[in-house]
Amino acid sequence: MKNRIVRGIAGTFILASLLLAIYVNINWLWFTAFVGANLLQSSLTKWCLMDTILEKLGVKN
Image (spheres, rainbow, N blue to C red):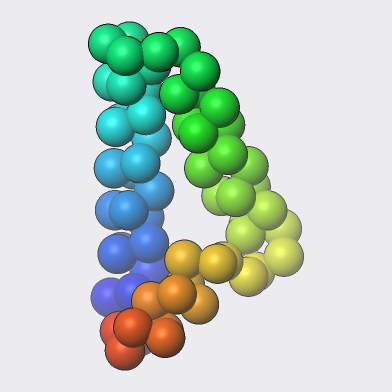
């Protein structure tokens, strides 16, 4: 369950930042890059900040 939430949040952030880059300011692409870098980092280290945040909010596996 938590894994699906993390992927959903990441996907939403990426799509939102792409729309913001198109319609507001191109610098929103830095946020897209940040989300992508965090996804890559979590695949290498098996640790995800959003996973930790969701745990503290009481979301169970």
